[in-house]
Every structure is written in structure tokens, then in C-alpha cells.
Length: 271
Image 1 (cartoon, helix red, strand yellow):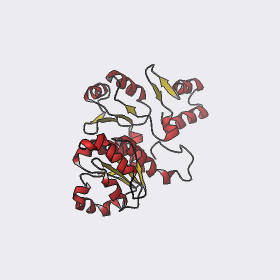
Image 2 (cartoon, one colour):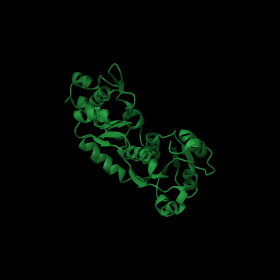
Image 3 (cartoon, helix red, strand yellow):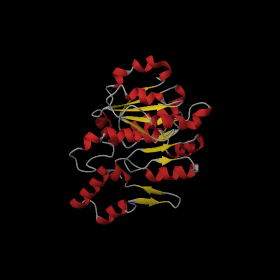
Image 4 (cartoon, one colour):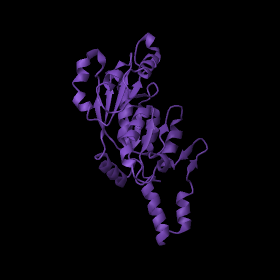
């Protein structure tokens, strides 16, 4: 249930248009819905500003589809990450309007029309989030970050394949980067792109090491350690291949100014 829906319900009770019994029926599953194999946190939007996200890996397709079914009607988008094709097929059978992004391995069930309109209006008032990838091989993680930030109501600029092996490709984007409110850098190999980029921009930078690389890369550990040891200030680091975490954090950073002076949960989750 979105904040708007909850306010409308309470206003209906106050005015007498909605009986307390009917209101109780609508909110009795809050704060969570116990499915036996999962407890869906319907109050997360009210607490944190964005609904619970489904991590599909390790779940049966039928389990993911059931979770989606119970999340529908809340007035918020449904996001599922690390979604393979069998799971997507189960979700798509249930929700034909759902969108699958194969490169990022995630699906999105768009929110209702009123919420989409509200999100679009809010997005135009926010700064842009820039997502960089060192190489094309880093695109799955970069797209996971970009799509996560977008579904949370942000404008995203994608700048892919601008790694340090051809530094001129990055330098050609400096003017664009300096206009961004938050920058996400996704890179494997030695992960140097994060440090180089941080030294060129005023915005906070979120570094995402990827598991792209050869033997001594150790599945992304080399890039992770390089990013943690960045000599450029203003760099934060998420876990290896965690594009979702970077996109989520960037979206939260991009909303900080909007919350100043406002009551907690004053508007829709992603404002």
C-alpha cells in the first residue's frame, strides 16, 4: 500500500465514507504478508521510501510469481533482480505487462498510472545519475544499476565502455559527468576507472567492482580492493557485481535534498 493509498483510506474513515471494518480488511496484512515461505514487507515503502525488492536467485519460479501476485495492487512498482528466464516466464504468465531486461537479468512490474505520473513529475525535478562502465563486459552490472535507479524515479545517463585503457573516451565525457548529481562507476579488471573518474567530478561516486577479468583478478577481488584503496576522495564501494545496491544508494542520495524540511514519508516512496 502506497502512502497515498493509506492516506486516502484514513481520510475515507474520517469522513465516514469507509467503515472501520472495511479499512481493517485492507490493512490487516500490514506490516507484512506471511506466505509461509516468505514474509512480504508491505510497510517498507512507508519506512524506507521504496518497496521490498525480490531477489529471485535461489527461489523457485512459482515462489517468485506468488510473491509478485501478493505485491500487486499496492500502487508501487515491483522489481525482481537476478531473474533467470524460467522465473521470468512464470512472472510474465501472471503479469503480461511486466517488463524483462535480459542483460540486467531483472524484471519490472510498472506501478499504477497515477503513481507513474507522479514519479515522472518528480524525476524531472531531480538531478541526473550517470552510470559508467569500464567495458562492454561490465554492462550486465551497469544495467542493473541504471534500471534500479530508473525504477526508483530518477533520470539516468548511460556512458558505457569508457575504461582507462582508452582514457580519451572518458575525458570526452567530462562535461556530461560534471553535471551529474551522483555517478556510478562499474568496472572490472583492476578497477582503476573509479579513482580516475572521482578526480574529475564534484558529485559523490559509487564504485561497483565486477567479476570481469583474468586469473589474478580473483573474481572481482582485485577491483574491489583497488576501489576500497582509491586515492581520490568521495568514493564509496559496494560489493562485487552489486549493481542493484549501487543504483539503490544513488537513488537515495539523489533524494536527500527533497527530504529537507519535509515530514518523513510526506509523499510517494520515490520522491
